[in-house]
Image (cartoon, rainbow, N blue to C red; front, side, top):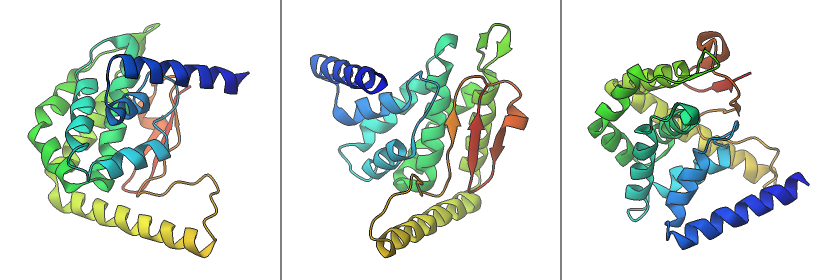
Length: 206
């Protein structure tokens, strides 16, 4: 039943995108930053990040991310947070043009320092504010950013070598410089539930 519901949902999304003439890559970014309680998934971020190297796709990707970051509907705070997660991943794994473009649009990210979203008196905006702060700090620190990109590249190469030696098997892990496990149910107690390091993200919301 769940698979059928997902199939129906995918069909309607594809139909809506076709009717509205939404470019495929733009729709992929919208789907990766939707309001569901999970994602963006590793494969979604990998595909979008790889597409940032194509000059025809890059403007669509960044425009859609900035559009999400400018949203202020508190009921859809996940749009903003997931766009930040995607941007953070792309800064490390995508085209270097992502870095320069994000630096040029840092005012959009900085504006999120006052982002507010509450559900049942619970502060949902804290995760957005903290993630935006981390991204701004990264964008201002060229040496650290270069190190993060080098680590991500090394992890991708290591993963590809591992896949080759194992005959291309896939065990559910996704390499790209970071490990992501995202479940968005609640954003309370940000500091204790979100662990950030240069090589790992674990985001749990309950």
